[in-house]
Structures are given as structure tokens and as C-alpha cells.
Length: 199
Image (cartoon, rainbow, N blue to C red; front, side, top):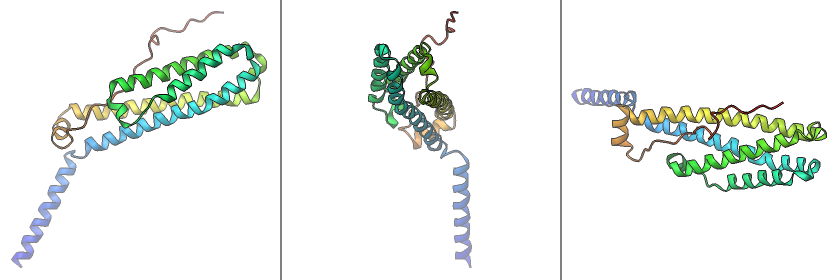
């Protein structure tokens, strides 16, 4: 009977210790890290969706606007540069790789903006069903990118805050010494100035 009670106490102590450790946040760092990585994957997914739409958009515009070769070339080259950037899980903890990724995506966004502004000169293109469908998909994708970036920023904020505050800082130092703060997106240069509108 004494051995049975001793085993019961030991099991109960083990369960209380396990519950205490799980309640103290020992798993918070890896949980938040995985959430941030999942959010980063969604950002990549949406940028890839945009990159996949661009060739069809360029081909549709090319059929109507042969003289706009320079703009079409800029979009194609910007897409090529953006898709050549090698992105993996380490990108989010490497400021230089993250900056290169963001810069390539910003260049592609600028080139797409110039392409869509060029389209305004071609009313027959603006009314083409194929172009309208592609434009609508591209606009939807840009919205998805914005949402994915917002979710990633929130996930990184939670993760980075956990790494910098107590007790998460202590837990990470002892149990997760390789945990590094993750990078987040910055506003595009010049975005603080409102666009000029000319009539």
C-alpha cells in the first residue's frame, strides 16, 4: 500500500510539474515562431500568385498596345528579378535578405502601377473581358498581399515581443538559444508623400 501511495504521489507531482511548466509559457517561443513562419509562408504565397498572373496580363496588354514595349519590358524584368530572389525560412531573420526581397517586390509593384496607368490610353483594352478579369484578379491579389503582410507583421510583433520581454527572454535564452528576432516590412520609400493628381 505504501508503494502504491508513493507512486501515486510521484505521478501526481509529475502531472502538476508538467501542468506548471506548460502554464508558465515554456512553449510560447516556439509556438509564436511557428505562427510567424506560417504567416510568412502566406506572404510568399500571395506574392507568387501575383507573379503567376503577370505573364497573362502582359500578353493581354501586348496584343493591344504594341508601342508600349518599354513598360511591358519593365514589368517582365521586375517580375524576373522578384522571382529570382531566393526566399526561405532564414529570410525572416536575415535583415539583408529580407531587404532584398522587399525591394524586389516594391520594384515589381511600381512596374505594375506604370503598366496599369498606361492602359488608360487604350479604351478598347480597358473594355476587353480578358483584361478586366486579369485586372480584377490582380487587384484581389494586391488586397490579399496587404492582408498577408498585416498578419505577418502581427505574428512577428508577438514573437519578437516574447523574445524581448520577461519571462520569454529567459525561457528563450535557456531553452531556445538559436531564436532570433524576425524582420518585418517597412513602408516603401516615398509612400509618406501623397500622390499627385493632375486633371
